[in-house]
Image 1 (cartoon, rainbow, N blue to C red):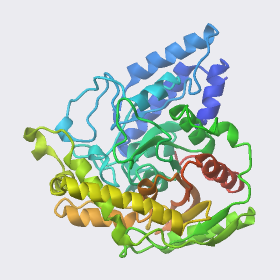
Image 2 (image 1 turned 90 degrees about the vertical axis):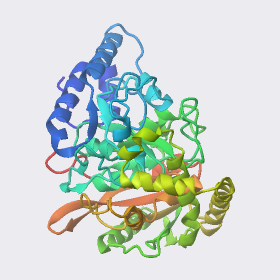
Image 3 (image 1 turned 135 degrees about the vertical axis):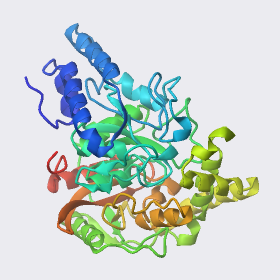
Image 4 (image 1 turned 60 degrees about the horizontal axis):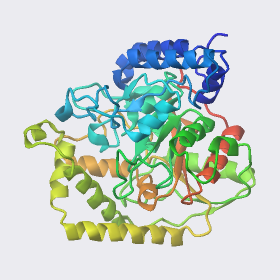
Length: 464
């Protein structure tokens, strides 16, 4: 049976396990697409055919000999370049780590590999994952397959571009302030930031203050559920994929388009209209839709700022490579060095109070609907400002004034490509975001699947 173009991860794994498709042929198809499209997209930091084909041959051998294979058997799944994989390039989007090769394999990457996935490459990310755009120094910027003049978002921009272009159905991603959902919205795909603690990075990485969560970006809700099932085998809800067969029940959903972390962010009319449209669809599906209050005043975001900058300052880089860092990273590190231990402790305490405050403000709401971005996907270079990193940082905050709420509070949050809009003569995805209750990722995914069934979206960008 011939391989179906743009097949989902669920279908690919099922057909490979049944012997209907060859994992080697799946790998070759994905690798060919990556080689063909990447010179324009900039999705990959490295393409690794030898690794992927060896993994694929092992999967095919296991199937042929009747051995059990993993839930991602034969699924091409690249790893974000911020995660270490033994023997593969590990530069974290930085010239300061040029030529660095992974000495071990990160826990998250190992789970995906052990599940039978094929590591066709490392996807591009900005330096150490800090910016909300993927424009790494020394490489071409990562762009959206919907409009290659526009960036793919960050920091999981390479992962999102590869999925949206149809190269792979699923890719590893991570999110510390929106880095899964921002690229998902920019590229018209699905991006879930799981609840804090659901996906453990131990023992290879400690969770730190709990802002960063690993996950996947995909084209379907079912593929996202499959990916989280692999990454969070000990989650208390059982199989997320199996749970999608159940309706979410009637939920109380708050709606707001008021920016949270910025008092200056202008919100594009297309982003407002997308939220209003999805709000109507939710009501049509039987949910109670109400206005949601603002999560917290913008000045409370200072806790995130202090922790983010301290994280940059704590990177163990030798002095001789500091001059190779981007102006943004240098600026963050300089600010982080000014945060005292007492300042950091106060920021951590403020973060805990913030979580409580949001719980009070959103009490009784099963999910809150907002835009993912305040504007359509940004043009390459529109947010970046090497001559004024402070202005760069402010522009990023204005572009993404909702995403970090979920990171600060530990809540699950998903961007869905339900709406498209004509922007200056080009059809673009306009992401809408649902942020749920902490620990109820299963309910949030069932709600997302219900919307997907009622209002399906294009599985790949036009022309892909």
